[in-house]
Amino acid sequence: MADPSLAVAITRFPAHGPAADRPAGPGVAISVVVPVFDEVENVDALVPAVLAPLREMGRTHELIIVDDGSVDGTFDALCRLADAYPGLVVARLTRNFGQTAALAAGLDMARGEIIVTADGDMQNDPADIPMLVSALEEGYDIVSGWRRNRQDDLFRRIPSAIANWLFRRIVDAPVHDLGCSLKAYRSWVVREIRLYGDMHRFIAALGYLRGARIGEIPVRHHPRTRGRPKYGISRTARVILDLMLVKFLRTYAAAPIRLFGGLGLITIGLGAAILLYLAFQRLVLLHAIGQRPILSLGVLLVFLGVQFITTGLLAELQLRTYHESQRRPIYVVREVARHAPALDDQEASR
Image (cartoon, rainbow, N blue to C red; front, side):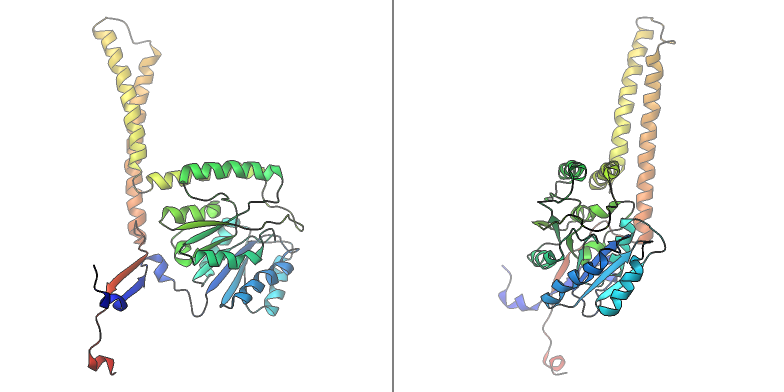
């Protein structure tokens, strides 16, 4: 058992790596990041609705709204609001890059030790932000909102329910509502993640795969009353493809040769079995095999298996280049504890 007298001498250090290179900044406890696109009808209500609970919490805060190339006057409206609300930071992208890029821009700007994300359509309730932060401080690294009583039509709810079911099966994370944008993160989680494509909805999943402790709480959800939805049922196929990517990242990201090499061994085995069978037919039974389609299949499977293995080896080389060029470790250190020796009398008197 450790000596109790050493308990007060243990010093904890934050995780090292990309997250540690980007300090939270002086005096900012909570950052709220909201990407918007053509939401001029909502921003006048959005800004005070978000800032009000932040002020009630009594912590230093900032609200970062990223305009993703709006063409309806959203940015002008936000600039007017920035004059009235000192806690508001407005960024404007040069064009419409998509929600993932807009969210990534806001996360890069955020200085808070806790980062909250939300949508700008006023369907998320900003009054739930203190509840998310409180749950986060119970020991979680990520707290995801759960729209238990979702106020959308069936054309959006049914594909979402299917995607959430697939997500729980693939990732095995305790999240019922993958698509809810209202989430709270510790800053190290989002600093460790690079977003591409439409991966914004998988930030919690990617953080979970990096070892973050994740929780979920029910949040309120309101029907959209102003503006128009930016997504329809067409995004279902993209979500399924992204889920396949998350599955790959979870299982094979550190060793892609296991996937491609496994497929290669299977196909080579099948091709070799076919060729051995044909060899027996030709050499023992003296049957003609030159015109049999199965001969082409056996040769094709062997060559396909070799290509699979070669692809796996190339992926391994690319993986090493990726990590070593960025000096990006394959691990994340949460914290380090070590004994801090007591100061001698002379040092203590200084």
